[in-house]
Amino acid sequence: MSRHRALVTGSMLSSAELASIEHDGLDVEVIEQTLGEAELSRALADKDAFILGGNEYVSATVLSATARTRVIAFLGVGYHSFIDVGAASAAGIAVTNAPGANRRAVAEFSIGLILDSVRSISHQALRTKVGRWEEVRGFELAGKTLGVFGMGSIGSTVARIATNGFGMRVVYANRSPKPEIEAELSARRVGLDDLFALSQIISLHVAYSDGLKGVVDSALLRTVRPGAVLVNAADPRLVDPEALHNALIENRLRAAAMDGYYIQPPPAVDDDPHRLLALGEDRFLLTPHAASATADSCRAMLAANLSSIRNVLSTGTDPNIVNPEFRRHPRWRSRLT
Image 1 (cartoon, helix red, strand yellow):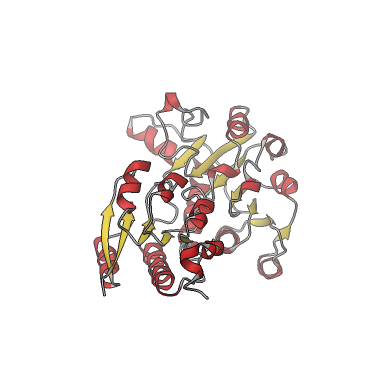
Image 2 (image 1 turned 45 degrees about the horizontal axis):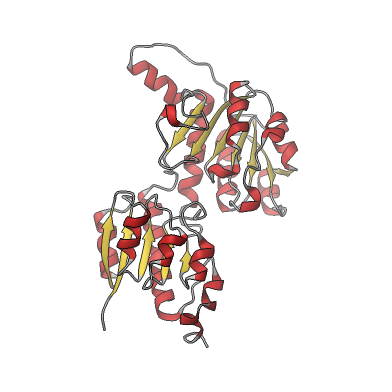
């Protein structure tokens, strides 16, 4: 029986982790540089599976040219910015992710962005290296209020670290109450307007959907506590870029930090339509979608991806499938009946 072929993109995986894919029964092509639409279409033409670990966008055009591909396994959780899931379903391609595998990594990274933003660590480090010996006054976290939007596994881990490690108070906004978190951390569930009005630190961890695009808008940012910090390690599209720029320029926000940008990779500063890249690191801190990039989380995410690929290719089912409607495609109906 011939082995299945898989494409792996990005540079997150080590040589040992890539070797483990081969040991799992897949012939692998690894491409580290970001692929454009035509390049990705060509690379997928002879592949049964795709482990998406880079910054590619799997568009409807790409999917229409991939008659052989059966499963796209996203090396992470937040796949919405990288895959046209509706087009994948129409093409009969399963999309999976790795929920929970990067929980601790993203939570710790979020705490790092909070610390950097309130103490201007990156800004001071860069200025010091060029001879500018100037202190920037920040504030301590103890006794301050953290507002968590999205109290899932990552949000609750951030809340625990903030409370137990830094002595912060926690308020949260979530579709449903989290009584166990409320009991454990004395956290209080509030509406989103109240969360922004009450919190010195606001950390976004809600899963993105089209209905939440720009949910953090100018009206919400007008209610923000003066001098607050906004951290977004979830999805850039949750925050309206014009509203964010205005809140920073008008000093309603002390700083904002984002893991990932509206344009990936970001343009040159002068070409940025959102004008955020021109702000200093003390006002707008940007990292390259790196929150989950630890050896521990990469191993866990890859294990989840490989399990999903095995399951989909053999049975068409897997608990991490995000688009079960892909099975309506004729190629699957005969196999699953």
